[in-house]
Length: 398
Image 1 (cartoon, helix red, strand yellow):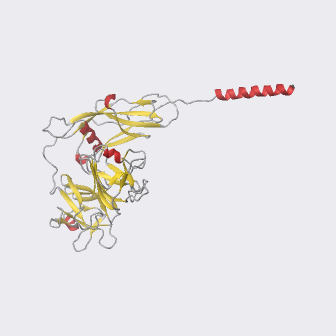
Image 2 (cartoon, one colour):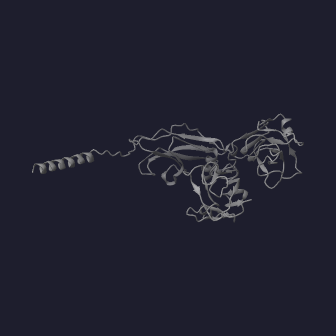
C-alpha cells in the first residue's frame, strides 16, 4: 500500500513538472517598432544623359529596422509615379542597408513617366519619381514597416540638335587580338561616338602569345578600303595609351594587346587624347545593365556562377554578346536560361517569358520543356553573337 502511494505522488509530481515546462516556454513574436527612413541625402534634381548612363545616380541607405526581436529582415526599395499605393513597384531588395541605382535605371524610370528630351514634343523633360523603403520579416509577411515616400526630380536636358561630335559615327577594329573577329569583316568590334570626340564599346581581347595573335588596328568603316589607324597614329598625336597596348612592330605597326584575355570597355577620347581599358559596362539604356546566362547549353558556364555568359546593354533596349553554345544531345545538355544578376536569387527569364511576350526567337532555340521551361539550343556547337532586342522583340543568333 505504501508503494502504491509513493507511485501516485511521483506521478503527480511528474505531471506538475511537465506543466511547469510547458508554461515556461517563451515565444518571440516580431512586431514593428519605430520608424523607417532613408539615411542618405538626396540631390535637388538628377540630370540624366545617355553619356553618363553607367554612372551612379543614387545610393539609397538606411539603418536597421526594429522588430523588437532578433529576426532576419528584408528591405525592398519601391518606386511610384504617383506617390501612392496605386502603382507601387519593387525596384530591388536586399538584406543589407543599401541599394544603388545608376543613371541608366533613372532613364528607364523617366521614360516610364513619359519624359523626353525633344523640345518639339509636348512631353515634359522634367518629372518626379517617388521612392520608399519597406522592411519585412519572413517570406514577404504582413509584419512590415514602411517609410514615407521621397520625391526625386528627374531632368532630361533638352536636345538642342547638337549631336555628339566625332569625326566618324563609329570606329571599328579587326585583327587577331579581337577575339571573335580576327582579320575579317563578319563581326568587327564597333566603338560608337558617345560624346564629343569620345568613342567607346565593349570588346573581347586576346593577348599576344608570340604569333601576332594579339594584334589589331582601327578602321573608319567596315572594309579594307577605309582609312585605318595603327599604334603610331595615336602615339605621334600625343595620346596616353593604356599600358596593355604596345606597338606590335609587325610591319604595319598595329596595336598589340599584352594584357589578360577577357572582355573590356575600350574608350578612345580624342579631346583628352587617351585610349583606356576598363571593366565592361552598359553603353545603352535598358531595364538592366547586363543579362547573364547559365546552363549546360552555355559551354563555359554550366549550371554555376563562376563564369556566366554576360550580355551587356549596348543600345536602346538591346543586349548582345558572343557566347559558346553546346547543342542538346538528349541529356538536357543544351539547356539554359537568362538571369538579371549573378546568382539564383535574381529574376530569371525562360523560353515562355519571351515567347508569351510575342518575341520572334531564333529557330536554333526551343522550349526545353524540362520542368523549368528553359531555353534549349538545337543548332551546331560553336561561337555565336546572341542579341536580345527588347524593342523589336527578337532573339537572334549570328
